[in-house]
Amino acid sequence: MKYDYILKSEKIYTLDDGLPMATWIAVKDKKIAEVGMDPFPEGEIIKDLGKNTIIPGLIDSHVHGGTTAVMLSNINLAQVTSIEETLELINEKCKTTDEDLVIASFFIQPQIREGRYPTRQELDKVSHGKKVAVISFTLHGSSINTKAYESIHFPPGLEGIMFKEGEFTGELASDEAHMFALAELLGTLSLERYEGYIDAFGEMCRSFGLTTVHCLEGQFMKDDLDLDLWIKKIADGSLPFHCVLYPQIWEYKRALKYNLPRHGGCLTLDGADIDYTMAMFEPYAGRPEVRGNLFRKDNDLYELVSAAHADGKQCSFHAMGDRAIDQILWIYYRVIKEQGQKNLRHRIEHFSMATPAQVKMAADLGIVVSEQPEFTYLYETPGGPEEEIFGPTRAHGMELYRAVSDAGVVLAGGSDAPVNSLNPLTGIHALVNSPNPGRKFDVTGALKVYTQNCAYAAFEENERGTIKKDYFADFTVLEDDPYEQPHRINEIKVTHTFSEGRQVFGD
Image 1 (cartoon, rainbow, N blue to C red):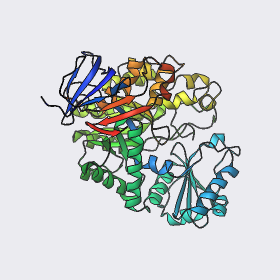
Image 2 (cartoon, one colour):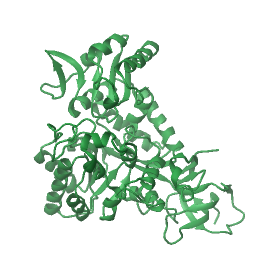
Image 3 (cartoon, one colour):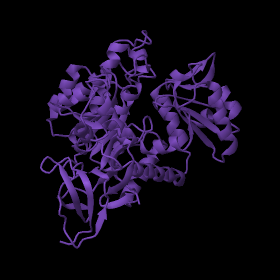
Image 4 (cartoon, rainbow, N blue to C red):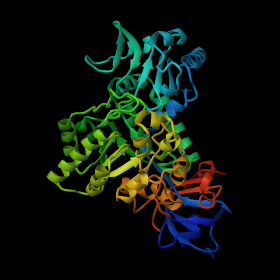
């Protein structure tokens, strides 16, 4: 057979139990035609990658793609520690940009000296006539200035629009208010500008070795115009990665026009830990008067899942706290009991504070969970934010990835970008190097969380996630070997990325 080319390297980790190591891969028509050890077929085009390490193309199971590009292309507040610093950065941007909308992202309220968002009036003083939004790094809260507020047509009775003495403070403290405002504001962007953001996101993905991305889109742009654009980009083949699109639309019938085999994504059943809106059975240690919030009624959620399950569609919802996890698990249980299993691999995103009983229930129901290992690795330090919020015992017992996997639940790795880094090697590093035994994997197990398990989560385990004959030719090429340097996986550079046989990154 005449191949398109043969990829050669001293070390190829296939994650295929039948042939775990190889030295060459033959590619033909987007697929892997053969995998083997020396000697390799002669008379073929050879791409020799020398001592670089080849692994299956890395997959991210949970990304807000368009939002990631928007956030990373604007003001980054991740290192800011005061309102004054925040306002200085916003002032400089507003003063120099021609854009009407200025977004300042990654605002971490607990590290701000004043412990609050900037007020509407403070933002007005530095906005130079622009609409301004300061967005929490969790994507679950924000603060906006007067011009932004007046441009948004909030529905009557929407909770979370904060007032003091009859005046709007600027803060949007509920998911509903924040996401409605963000969708309205991003809806003012031209489609050309938003398409530019998607292209910028594609550049990030290929540089990080991502060959498949589960993009959770919709909800963050008015009238879901971003979904239409993602559908177009997928159809015209202009993305440098394989995109699995999740439509984040609460109204089930409205999503049917996209004709996708899945529904949901990060549709929020509760909020986030750092905002104290993650729904818990027991109060927070940091705020003992608070247990978080459930955003949806059981019956409304049941009707949505029931309709999707009847149509053979996989469902996916954001549930962080044990109270929210309990809600969606029992909804899934009821619908499966009424309609049958169907192997739809319904998903729970985050699954952060699952109890042992909930983990067992998820395994029994065949639920797939998508979790973000980089998060706990960054914040699990003794005395750090998670211990302050939950107390040491609960903080130590949250997001036990290894324990979840050992219980029989398929764990798919994701970034939740823009909340965390888009680089999947940081998540793999977190799993391998976690000091918590309940989160720790060996290198092979960690790689599978970001390859085979993610493929399984999208019903693609027989065509992606492994270097094997007849699978898609998706490869991530690394400068160093993660097996030989497990303590610095997060520092390893991606040298080349191949997506469905195309080299999309590297010289």
